[in-house]
Image (cartoon, rainbow, N blue to C red; front, side, top):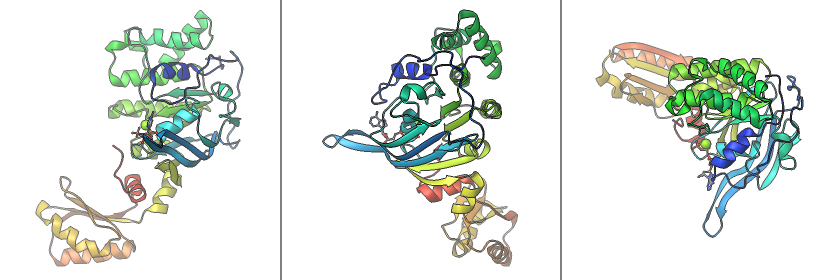
Length: 361
Ligand SMILES: Nc1ncnc2c1ncn2[C@@H]1O[C@H](COP(=O)(O)OP(=O)(O)OP(=O)(O)O)[C@@H](O)[C@H]1O
Ligand SMILES: [Mg+2]
């Protein structure tokens, strides 16, 4: 994959398929074959948005403020994950960065380029795998990738070589010559990711890359993403899976109603928003409600019950002191436990505390 040229094939493909994406800024690749150096760590942010707004609809028919003054910085050399409940504005933001729609107001730079003034320049540095896999079912996996490489202006032999390199990267060599219509959902997602890699983009945008994948395929895709990052590609992804953000991202932005509401590393977010959690697993399910009642006065929120797991969890203000009280109260009542302990909040709990909604699964 020596070629690093115009990177708008996803714009082309997505623009044919996403009639919902508002004003489309389509165009053919600009300067083909231009060399674009990868961003050095600590250089200017990969993506920087300030006061970004985008609405759909009209005053008369009802207006949705999908982005309502979004401030977001994706640092260079890192994986940035955007988390948010359904309808938070994640896809709208990804489309703005991919120059598939034009924001109403605010500023947006991508790799230092003003994305609103110069969308065609931005398309040369990005690759996009959209929320819905955009591959051609009648063609084989290899033919799909060759087609994309040709759109980038590769010669036929160079396109063949680029497709082969990407197929190896996404572990799809064995199925490369079967028509995509016979692929599983996970294989299609992998091919879609592969298509976004054909042009060796400096910045890769992934909108829910692993939604609907089985756990093994998800882990394989994480590995592919990690090795891309090690090779110098900056990645911004949205995800429905908090564990994914926890595993992959160095930088997380939680958005809700079109605004950023929290930012930090997974660890920072957990300590920012969360209190320690006392978690108890009872031996007998019928004790669960009693334990929850006993723990309630120690908690800063109502205890959370997980009946199938016979578990109750409650965030506490006093950490180990609260744990000691919980142990005393429970043993005084002679309730038998499998386990009791103090743990840091999970990202799910942070998300719940910040957005007031459960994990977006
Ligand atoms: N083309 C459109 N026309 C009208 N409203 C839209 C359009 N696209 C998005 N919206 C609305 O804008 C808001 C943000 O949508 P967006 O797709 O960006 O959310 P999201 O965070 O990606 O959600 P999800 O997790 O469900 O993918 C939602 O209220 C949505 O209904
Ligand atoms: Mg979305």
